[in-house]
Length: 138
Image 1 (cartoon, rainbow, N blue to C red):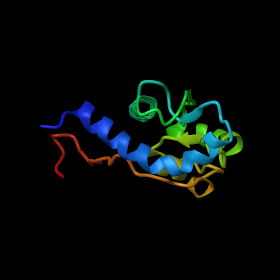
Image 2: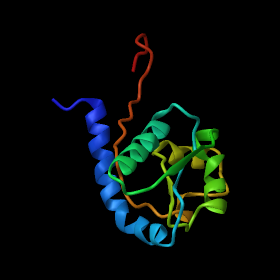
Image 3: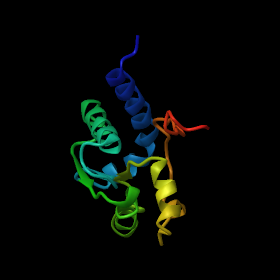
Image 4: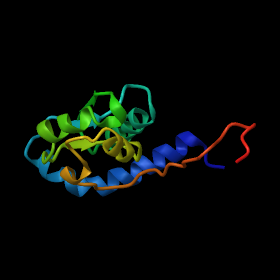
């Protein structure tokens, strides 16, 4: 049976493979490290995914070092404009986020949206559930 840790590691390895061609130009230019941007607080799912990606890229020697930057708040919409203005378009930068941000962009009427970044890989899927109180007639 595949446990959660192995699943995350193998998923990150696949993502790392997909990113290799994207990273090569940056590393060839002498980029000192990979920049992983997480538009959420440390410890959550996006952060854990970024740290797993970091671990796999280092262990496979695809990068020489990295820096993980966390900017939490408003479902990722606080960090998104920071990524766009500071890291977007750089070959050694990667934002790790999820579907929550789509709803947060709409709910918060955010000035920035995901059309301003380029998706390169889907590493995980998220299940969503709609629930009501047990006493509800629905």
